Image (tube, rainbow, N blue to C red; front, top):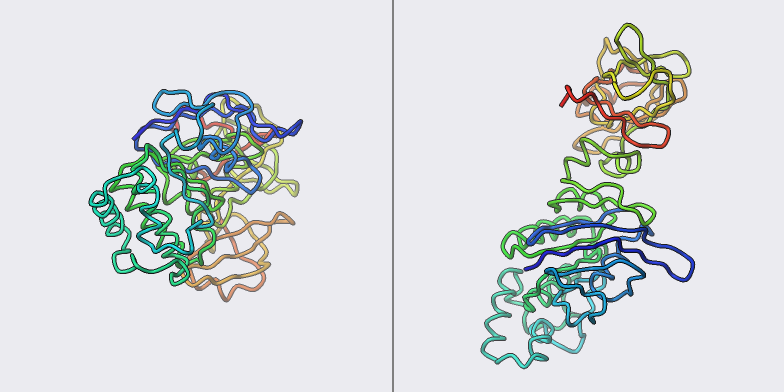
Length: 361
């Protein structure tokens, strides 16, 4: 397996920049997920690591060796695409062993390697079938098997599950995680699905507009998002954002909304009073309570089975609540809520996180 270093990498198509100086170090055996909306540059970065796209400037090193000018076949990586790209006229076994046959690997060795990979992926009974006789999930397993038999230094996954239905995606996600645990292979996985990112990654790389916004463990991005983009992208339903003014009085800090409503927050010693800020709170952290400090109008209620999403508003400021309390299904006009002080996030006018006092860590 191998470490991968991306150093000050940029990509432009003519005068149109797509990636702006990406720096990233991926440790040997690490599972990294690149996540972000369509067009953020995550697939382009993956393809540059694979050698399928030219690097405009900067460098990529695999196991300490600069690979900018190496063709894909010499980088010793395996890629799993969104489209399975299987040979329709070949059996599952032949699809999986194709790269080994090209390398003139001995037949006995090919049989052994394919048997090992197919048992890991539950393909043993399908080896003689052709792709058209397989389901979408089975085809994606074959594509993964084809990558595994090559025993590469790194696996690159480009949105491999996005063609599958929700239930199958869930199942394949678990299989990919188990597989990574068994193989311990360095893996880079691209997705726009933040649930996939949260469940699979050792570390998440959140990207937006060709720029890396934050790198960290999944719960680090969930608990301490670096900016408004990460805060809104990670988590489902997304974080609520309410605009107001940060005010301090007698050693206490609060956010004051336009109608005069105030929400107490922890004091930010690095931040002066009476400035515009955005207050963030996740829907699952809003507390519905009969004696809640804030009265909110009920706009819409969505039962999801496990829980209930309530769409509320405070004097025209919309926000959501996720609750397991089914008694709220009877709410018609308004409910009272609390915003727990320890669950609040503050962002400045540029959208960057305003850090808590160091004593709060």
